[in-house]
Image (tube, rainbow, N blue to C red; front, side, top):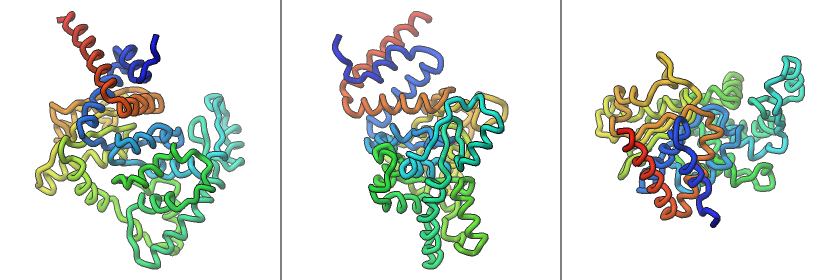
Amino acid sequence: MPTPTLPVLEFVANNYRNFNARATRDALYSYWDHVGSGGKMYWAVAGAMSSAQLGITLAPAIRAGLVHGLSVTGANLEESLFRLVAHHGYKDFPDYRYFTKKDDTKILKQRMRRVTDTSIPEDEAFRAVEKILVPMWKKASKNGDRRFWHEYFYELILSIPKSKYQGNPEECWLLAAAKAKLPMVVPGHEDSTFGNIFASHVKFNDCSANIVKSGIEYMGQLYDDYKVLSKGKGVGFFQIGGGISGDFPICVVPSIKYDLQQPVKPWAYFCQISDSTTSYGSYSGATPNEKITWDKLTEKTPMFVIESDATIVAPLMLAALLECCKNPKAAAAIIKASRAHTAKSAAKSR
């Protein structure tokens, strides 16, 4: 039997037939339909995906042109940097489910900050980066400079000498995004370790709060970014988790339409990977068609909800999409055959 040229895509096509697996397969196919035909894709990333090393697949996806804009939490932003400069200092705790309060107190005394089954080293990550970032803030305060939160991190990560790398730079999504100069928003960045550190320096009058542009200014910039990204085939929305990283950018469409009173294309695709189940009054657990009533999506928008663990689903989808980039003709054949099989099965039920 010949070795398949697109093993991940073929695995999905052959095995992902029903339930969340089917939603994953269909979302993957539709993603490729959109990007492969010239469309753009905007990602919203919540949770602790950087600590979970999403960069292993997200960084090459950015370089391959599969991701064209990002909305991330302040934690995901800084933790991608930490994985690059402090990777050797991380400790994993595979037995975390069985920890006692004393076990976690021991981890605290080791100056580690646990994130589920891994942990960020206080001194190698937070304190080491603080020595670089705080002087940048002070210089900006002195010069009266004002930038977006991510722009400080873009400058920082591009200035770090390779000799300081501990993680694989090919697996650092922040480095890939900075090199590509991807448009980005970091809504609610105050709710992160460096957001807190920045607040403390403002409190001590070491820095001016004005050196960081506000969330309102982020939305103003997103107005412009969206108009560029949505040209041609439009821009899709790929969301991991819930919360502000998704809520903030998806609102740009109705805001342009109703608040700016300007013409705007709706999002051209929507997929959310989340373990937040559908529930009453939950934005993160709302079905996508609810967004039609808010004029963010339309009844023709391809919509997908994958109720699963994003650390499993997102890398799988990205790996398959990267295969599609390398061999688009073979990918088209696999997807066409898979869809034909699905259509045949559906016809039997009619």
